[in-house]
Image (cartoon, rainbow, N blue to C red; front, side, top):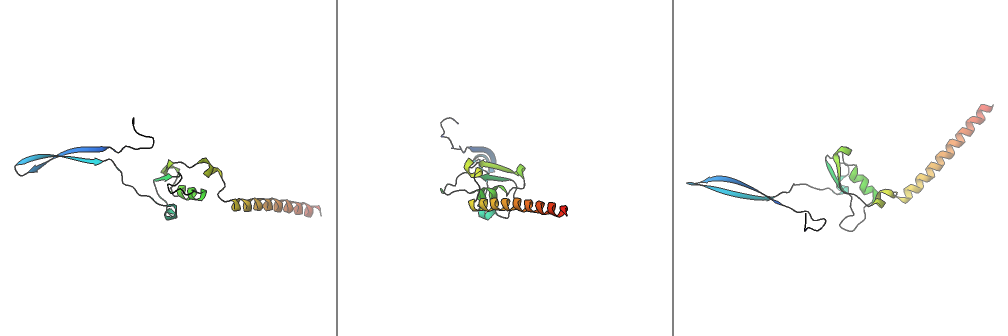
Length: 133
């Protein structure tokens, strides 16, 4: 809306009228109520082990100034029953999803991949040697 700063969400009031009988007359009453929908939130820790639908996930940098890790993003996104039941309020910085979640884990996985390739190669060589006799 014009005149509002970016990020400001206006909360409008809904008015409704109804009449009531009071003694010997009739009175019209106006009721005003903000248009708000009740909701609740979970922290990542609290949501673990739960499957929910629908889910609205906020992956923006926390207001506390802390860091959001790839593990946090995984836990939050995996709470939904499926991709049709998840919506994103705010997306994370690109860096969050393009960085490996744990450097130590990445190093171990690289070592295991090399070991796997060496084992396959050794097995194939042994198989060829056995076929020669």
